[in-house]
Image (cartoon, rainbow, N blue to C red):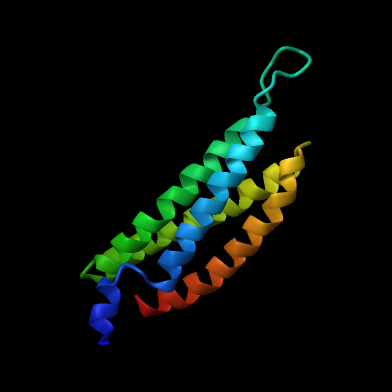
Length: 131
């Protein structure tokens, strides 16, 4: 396989890992949002419920940004989208840490997501060098 056809192949390792992260974050967010959707004793909603939506939004944005970076012709554009992938993965990691501090049974699944994000970051480093 030539180096040029690899860039256009949408199933690179980092792309596949981003899909795994999306699926995992969606499942965790669904579980957590069910637990956090009940009103607190003071009648207000739990503010941590918004972090569940954030992890889904950030993880769903990873794959399209990866594809955009891989499909650009100019290095400057590739690095612009790659920087977006870095930013999204960092935000996703921070939101996982925030959710780990909540009082919920679902928080036990968040270390698994953070472990997958660490694997993603290793792939990301190599991927950025190939852009």
